[in-house]
Length: 141
Image 1 (cartoon, rainbow, N blue to C red):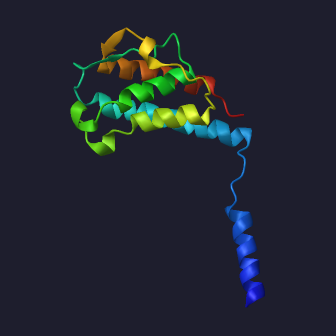
Image 2: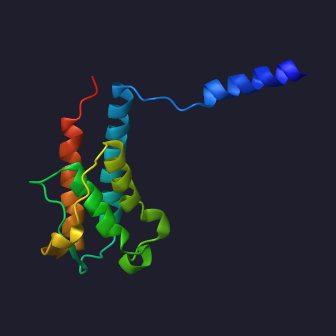
């Protein structure tokens, strides 16, 4: 019985151990997260909450992983109810943060140096355009 338990434990340790993703797996993960970002923006744009002004932290001319992180941070300051959303439709901030973590974004720029503000729907459009651009640029061959 002891040998069976040790064998079972050994198998669990080997199969349960985290493994390093291959470049192909990383690429597919990035593309999947970008697809989710685009889909979350589409869902959120159905709600007419455009009168809220938010910091303009991401633009189609400047689509970096750090700007995706900043956009996630700006959006996470708002609660779903403030935007007229349900909690299940408020996944975009987490998805943006997930994308920036999975692309190994190490730059930690402060958001406070952005003085431009845009309406909420414009920020969503900027996020969508950047996600589409990154999706096109990411090829998993």
